[in-house]
Length: 87
Image (cartoon, rainbow, N blue to C red; front, side, top):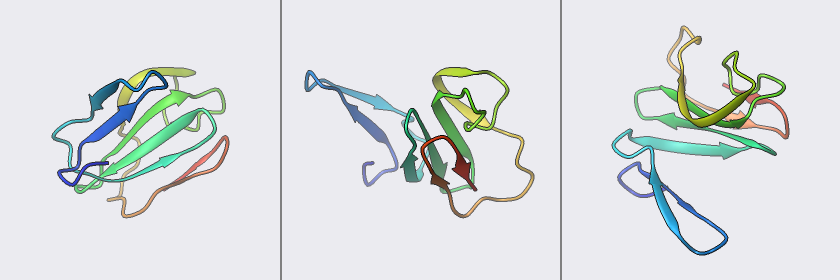
């Protein structure tokens, strides 16, 4: 997580990929095969294996980052376990 709120992934071949650029991410948390990120505005982004619906959307596998829009209140904190997420 960079100072400007951008997430950069580092892969096992030491290549880099910038993801969620210009989204003002303030926190990212990791589960076993999924992760969620929280922006400064309270928006949640999710990615990864969603077989237990831990990404907060109905699709079972999330190949790209998606915005979770089912939460009605402004989010101020997030957390992940191995196969679940907290907001």
